[in-house]
Length: 219
Ligand code: CTP
Ligand code: MG
Image (cartoon, rainbow, N blue to C red; front, side, top):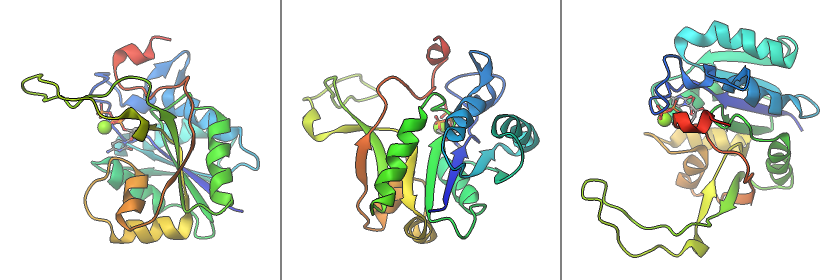
């Protein structure tokens, strides 16, 4: 099976408030992008890797990726768009046409272990068209009005899960779903669901968070 991994790293990281784009911010001696690629490098065989970077950061991203992956083989770096969905769309354009499985990962989820990549890949290999890593919700969840701060009755958390990345897809199904999808989706599973395809879950990683706020970098 031929696998491609798209690492989306083209966001600005507004909530982090750093002068450089979030994927290029340092965490314990390496950028978030490098950490993400380290997990990808743990896969064997090494998949095709597509990094989606902010337009002005394509060359720096290529340098960092080369350093982690040990060269250019199977590496593409492309410029992203103004939304995550647009960035994924551009990344998909660089995925090799003979890839059978595509994984899409947020550079912001820098410390996701290789085993989550393997678990997701395994479920797609076993026949699922779309696979996402999820966690049980342990906290009580309530709707909250952002303006007034008023909360309402708790949502049954038994029926809810937290979603993570990498999300994995059958390549043909993913391309078909993106070709008819318009607008922006919160993640790629949502694009698949919009075309009526079921997305299944595998266990995510409880120990790693998406880096969003400055506090998330304090490890
Ligand atoms: N992303 C992207 N292109 C965009 C927006 C987001 O490639 N136009 C990527 C980010 O680089 C990140 C992932 O999608 O790895 C998840 O997005 P998020 O955590 O929201 O990152 P940012 O959009 O950069 O952060 P913020 O929303 O705070 O600006
Ligand atoms: Mg964002």
